[in-house]
Length: 205
Image (cartoon, rainbow, N blue to C red; front, side):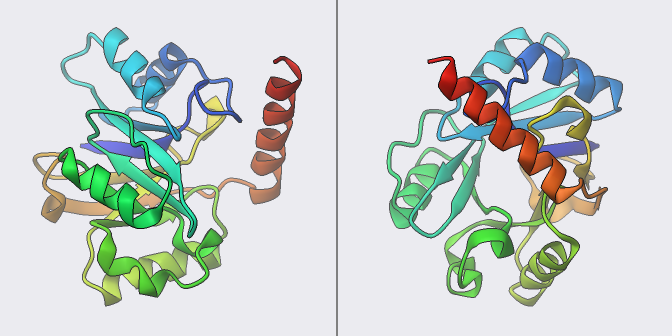
């Protein structure tokens, strides 16, 4: 079973992807499930779950929360995460039965080694991160015996599926993660598009 666990929809400030398009593209690319992890909200995932009538396709409710240290992805969420302080965000995520993921650790965290034991999972591959940073993230997971995730960090439709994990068994059981796969996006190109989309949205308000 193949999952992309980091996707952004139109409910993020820097994406125009509609939930129905995300579902269509993900299924076309052969994925068995996705996590929609919009910036600071679960709205995109909630919207996608409402229109997903395919029992063989899983939509995981998630959000990418900006904290004082860096972004934390929460997956399997039941409600919005209200805090923006790292320790409280972790507590909120776990308090509602979710998993806390240290997102793209070496892209923004000054010292991810200090925080690794606070989270449940490490994002060991992010398609928007540089190879060096992904290699460091994977090594961080291995050194600390932490389960890992992978995701495209898609803000554009062609990015969906560029970072995935394969799981044998239940998606909730990360001991069954078999492997991860991915193809890095052009870092400067995709981030340039995100900045442009954010500016367009800002001008439209």
